[in-house]
Amino acid sequence: MTGEKVKAVCPECGATNLYPRAAEGKKVVCGRCKSVLPFPGTVLEPTRAQAGTLFRNSGLPVLVDFFSPTCGPCHVMHPVIERLAQRRAGEVVVVKVNVERDPDLARDFGIQGVPTFVVISKGIERDRMSGAVPEEDFAFWVASRA
Image 1 (cartoon, one colour):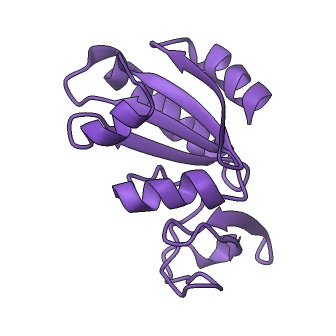
Image 2 (cartoon, one colour):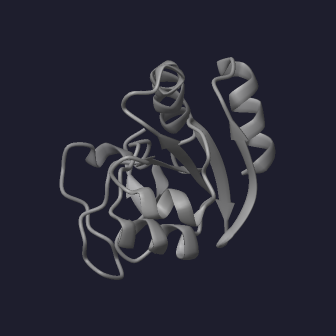
C-alpha cells in the first residue's frame, strides 16, 4: 500500500504527523518543527527533555519501559517491547528509559524496580506494571490502557 500513512509523534515537539509507510529509509520531517521523525514502530530512547515533551504533548499514548542493562527480566521483555512497538505503530509511542543513565527521570516517576512499564496519555499516567510477563498478557494490558 504505497499511499498508506500512519501517525508518528515528533520527539522534539510532540506534534502528531502522518508518516508515509513507503518512506521507510528516507528522511521525513515534522510538519511543525522540521525535526527528523523516527519511523513508526521504532522504540525511542529520548533525552530527558524529549521524554518530557513526549509525555506532555504526544497525541498518541506513550508506553514507557524503565529498564536497566544489567536486569535479566528487562532483557526478557526487550523483544516483547520491540514487537509491540512494531505491531502498534501509529497507535502507541514506545519509549525506553535507562534508569542507570537517567536516574532523575526514574526518581520523578517513583520507579523502585525494573522493568517497570508506565502508560501515559495526554500527560497523565494511566497505569503501571512491574516485572516480566508473558507477551500476550503484556499486549492485552497495553491495549486496555492505551
